[in-house]
Amino acid sequence: MKKNYDKMLKMPIPKLILILSIPAIISNLISNIYNLVDTYFVGELGVSQSGAIGILFTLMAILQAIAFMFGQGAGTNISRRLAEKDEESASSFASIAIFFCLLIGTLFTIFGLIFLEPFMRLLGSTNTILPYAKQYGSMILLSAPAIMTSLAINNIFRYEGKTYLGMIGLVVGAILNMAFDPLFIFVFNWGVIGAGLSTALSQYVSLIILLILMKKESVCKVSMHYVFKNKHQILIVIKNGFPSFIRQGLNSVSSGVLNAVAGHYGDDCVSAISICSRLQGFMFSVGLGIGQGFQPVSSFNYQKREYKRLKDTFNFTLFTSFGIFFVFAIISFIFSRQIVDIFIDSENVVNIGSKTLCFLCIGLCFLPISVTTNMLYQSTGKSFIASLLASLRGGLCLLPYILILPLYFGIGGVQVSNCLGDITASLISFPFIFIYFKNVKKEFELKTNMDVK
Image 1: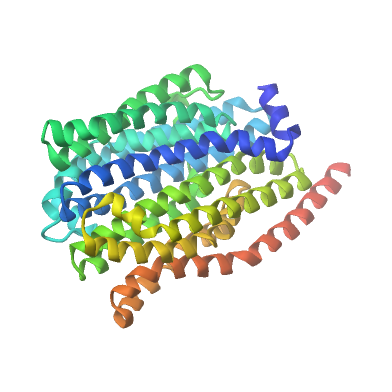
Image 2: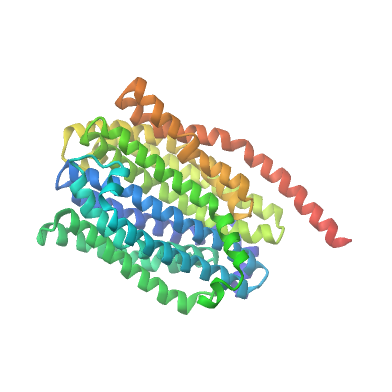
């Protein structure tokens, strides 16, 4: 405990962020590899099958939205309680996150399977994609408790400053998924349902490993005793995690709307948008990992009123993310056609997808501003502004583009929507950086003066 405490307050910022970020980056990449592996192998089966994977990407995002709400909502408080050396309160927040993710994931399984067909149509499935979406979707719904609970545990480890532990469970699951996919899809000839079964089994293996690591390595002790001991803490978790829910939830809504709009231009368009969304998620996961390494450090140092260290942490994270996203964007822009061609053997899908990917790369260069600023507000308990900023990228700035641009520019409007949403969200977020540090400096000075008195 003391070693971790000193690390958060004394270790040089670049070294600390990288130590915490690298396992987070690997974890995020692995989570996206789950999706890319399925996209690759299912793409070999046909365009409609590939489109089904894209439809279910929206469901995965919904599950992630709820899991991140509880995981990050608890994590922010865990980090701040550990800064005060209050392990019991930290354990209480961890228990709340795990219990509610397991409960809600189970409810998704039950009701999702009961209303499977209308649910798949709601997510944007066309008549030709629907049979495959139902097959893959049933497997994803069965794995919902594992997906959500694993994400909660991963966030707990991250805010404890032990991101490497969450990485271990995900690495094993990803390796299994990559091994099972070709076996189930082609050798056993199970097709799309084989891809879903591979993902489901891998997720449950990851969960078992994470639960074992949680019991052995975590500072937090998980118990039902803590869940309803202080009901006010449940509200605190939801409040602090609400920006994550908005961010991920609106991404889910936007993804579903985008699939529905793309569906008007045929399965080729849905498949192309699906592939590009997965590729964007893969690139985004690296920069996001840097931000996830930043969050526990910002929470900890905010609680200890270390203004300079908090500001240095933000600046390092912002500029490092810029560098990473820029490199990804340049490479993906230049080789957009070749990259999309890896995932599907269809000239029309590649034509649509390569242009879409070029636009996504432009928007990618602006993402560090909106994402890092949002994380700064959320990790330090500024829930209202964090929620406002979280609503921009996937919702307030994106949905109007998705709904309006195709009316005037057809399929081109679908392709450019995400790019314009990212740029607009970042331009709106930029002034909030200066507002934050101006207000926090005054807040710290006021608290210091009160302590002296």
